[in-house]
Image 1: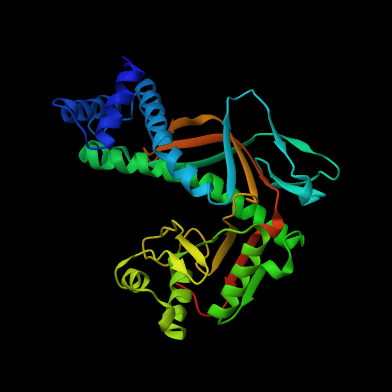
Image 2: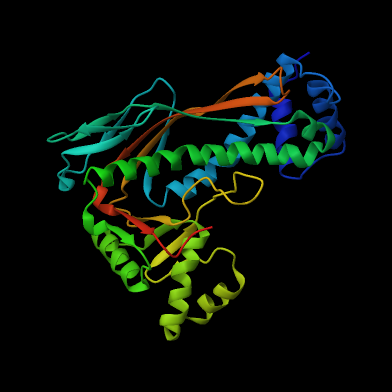
Length: 337
């Protein structure tokens, strides 16, 4: 027996946002019980697919403003229906010869010399993860919200992983200027500010610094000790109370979501000593991103470990247009877990 997708979507949205109506708590528990049993049987395949499908649709709505706000700092982002083709204009003042474009398996260098536009060819960006049905059965509402959050964060990570991959490829190929790459041991706040000035000079506006909290704290500590007189009361209060400080020197700092990947809290997904600077100017955002269609999923139930495995896929075109509006910071000695 399948349920109405629209009714499920309404139920899932109310449960996630903690706006449950009179029978919603009982309904979500009953749905999970019918889908997954009591934790001692395999999920019903048809109900499981529908359950995950609506979870992904709910997570996609949660992720959209998050992705737009995050990527909007350093990318021009637009959406299109799957099957349509979007044309990206190449600003002629850029005098671009090549640009980096995302593919499903890696990054391609595309020659654009003399061209005024390119076709935003979508790549299939995908990620896979699993969850334990018993968690949902025993703690239905809490684990349901965690599952939706996991999918929403996974979508954001699809884009960020590809952006970081493209930056690394462009640095290795020398397409991002050497002056935009700050790497070494015991980097100083003066070096940091010089790089920020370089990036800001490219397109104006505030420079955005995206990094792990440990790298942000490394430069923030220097700012506090080296030039305390420059700290306003607001920034000083922020240093004392905020988990994610937002201003370092000439930049706005954004903390990367970088969770632990083991049970001993000794490994994380992304390097803690590496960060990225982007021009916050409206005229030269370095990336062009076109999102085609909605987030999709494929589901399987493992007969060995009884975990539910989910693969999410998003079609998108990601192109690095302005390599000179991107900076990279690597602290080799003083920042580590």
